[in-house]
Each structure stands twice: as structure tokens, then as C-alpha cells.
Length: 134
Image 1 (spheres, rainbow, N blue to C red):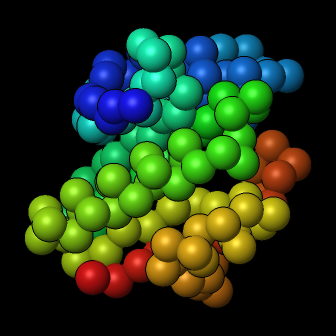
Image 2: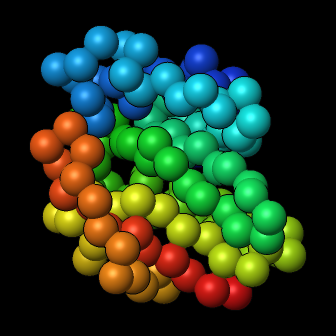
Image 3: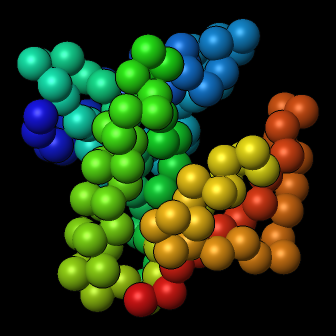
């Protein structure tokens, strides 16, 4: 297993199939993708999990975190998230945060992220902003 930086376009197919399969591919493409740093976790040269990081001021936001459906619950996403949190901590960022789907909050809490009071709905899905201060 290895984690490496990948291009934004390498993340799009996995984002699409895992997060928004009912939407067109363009729905998972972010206008700011060219500004982000994108990571992929590979096993036997197959892309298993992806995450995208965006720095603004001293805060890192991770977005579009997805793991292949047939590999979820096996620790791949946890390894990738642990990797980027460690990298964020070493980078000097003040915090790392995400827009978490309500049903995924317990997962993120295992990594030290805490719910904030900020919530919103997008495309019929409820989100809460979670953050971890370093």
C-alpha cells in the first residue's frame, strides 16, 4: 500500500462513483481543484481511496474524501486520513476541517475532529462542519 500525490482529474472517477453517482461527472469537479493537493491511496497499483486538501490562510480543508465502495470499512480511508492529518499538523496549519455528511460524523470524531455549530444542506444531504485545532 502506498499514498502519493495525484492529479485532480485522477480523483474525479472515484469521487463520482462513491459520492454522487446519480449526478454527472462535472458535479464532483471543483472550480478550485487546480489549487488543491490531491492524494491517492493505492494497493497493487489500484486507486482505493482519495482526498483533496485546500489551504486558506492557516487552515486546511479536506474535501471529496472517498474510498471505493467494495473497500470501505477495511481501514484504507483511515490510513489516508491519518496521513493527511499528520501532514497538516507538521505543515504549521492552525487547524484542519471538513464538511462532513451527518451520518459520517462518528468516523471523523475518531481522528480528533469535533462538530461545530455550522450546518448546511447540499443536494438533499445534511452536513456539519467539523474541525481539529492543532
